[in-house]
Every structure is written in structure tokens, then in C-alpha cells.
Length: 166
Ligand SMILES: [Cu+2]
Image 1 (cartoon, rainbow, N blue to C red):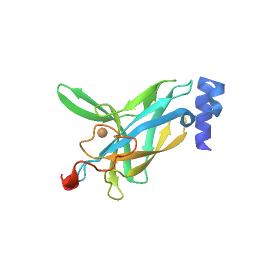
Image 2: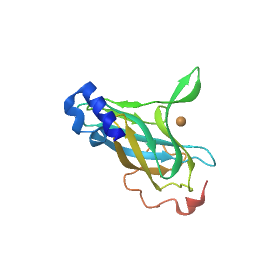
Image 3: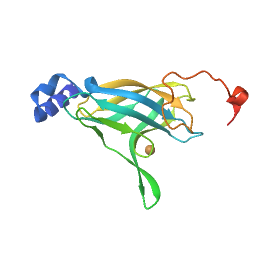
Image 4: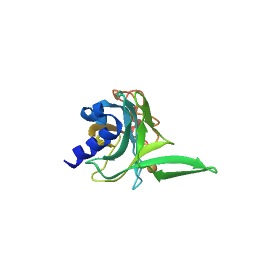
């Protein structure tokens, strides 16, 4: 009942009517993908989070059965150097959206429990500030990908034997 207690506390601080609709009820996830890097390098997780609710929402964490560690990160460039730091929360405005994208907010996934290869569907559960959770699936994409790719992965076509090319 810890989660409910927190939600009630938050609801009371904002608006009593918010008690029965959680952030997870209102957030839609699209274009969710992981960038898989070679070796021990962590994967980056990116998505569009759309909040259809009248209350702001905040993503405060994520976990996966595929990766032992999932963190919220924020990339920034200062003095020409790119750096990353932990983010406590990623806010999603009421009836607005938040982008998790290369160069900005993202999920950082490390310690995979089994090898992940492009095309894999990776389960991820998002946690919001009100304690609600949302089960999602991110598609694994190669290191050189810039987005989630086509909604339906196309069958290999013109590149013939190119599938072994690294
Ligand atoms: Cu990171």
C-alpha cells in the first residue's frame, strides 16, 4: 500500500480529482527504441512520451527484465565536451510531451542478462512520480541508427549479402 499512500499524498497536494487517474493511465509511449552498442558499452533508450492528462506527469525510473541497470540520464554539451549526468525525473507537461532523444534525456541500460541484437523487442517498465507503472516495449536498433526505424521492420531487400557487414 506504499504506492497508494504516495499517490494519495500527491493527489491531495494537487487536486483531489487526480486521485483515480494515474500518470500511467495518461502517458502514451511511441517511437521507443534502444541503440545497441558493441561490447560492454551501455545501450541508450529513446522514446516520445505523450501526456494526454490534465495534470503534469514525471518519469522517475525504469526497469527491465533484460538489463540489470536502467538509469535516467541527461546529456549536455558544455565547453565543447559532451557529458551525461543522472536525472532524478523527466517531466511531461499536461497535454504535452517529453522527448527522450540522443543528446538529451535518455535511458541508459547496462548489464544485459542476455545478448541483445537489433530487431529484439526489449520489455521496459516505466515508473512515474505518482508510483504508477507502465509496461512498454523498446525495439533494439543498431549503433548507427538515428531513430526507431520503420514501424514495421522491412524485410532485407536490395543489399543482398550485406547482412554480414560490420
Ligand atoms: Cu547516458
